[in-house]
Amino acid sequence: MKSIDETGIERILTRLLLHYARAVDRRDYEAIARCYWDDARDEHGSFAGNAPDYVAWLREVLPNVAVSSHQFTNILVDVESANAATSETYCLNVNVFAATDESPATHTTSLLRYLDRFERRDGEWRIVHRRVVTDWSRAETGPVSYR
Image (cartoon, rainbow, N blue to C red; front, side):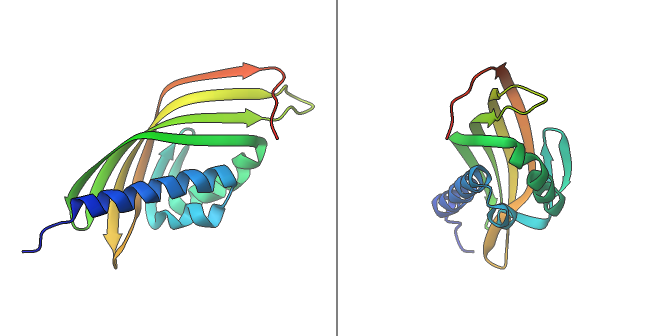
């Protein structure tokens, strides 16, 4: 029986998570989609559904966010087999919503945890299930500086 390269898998999955964070912050919807299997499920705030619908939902909500930053800190990966793993990732998320005629500029700061299940299919790792837990969140309105 072959041994599992747990360190290699952890590195691959950590990079996948970081690619996801960058893709969301850069509004690269195709790159976001590549992080998930098409049959994946995502439970993300007010959204719950499959991966293609999640990406479509992001296309609707992210244009309302002028600037966002997902800072992943603690990433704990548990390798179950050569084709399955889970992780818990801490995230400091900051969003700046630009002022509109209906509402003032808003700045939100959230402490999140991403609870992910990954599968390797045909040699490629992707997310098959994600649940996002909000541990704390704060919203402030008023003048916000951004570029």
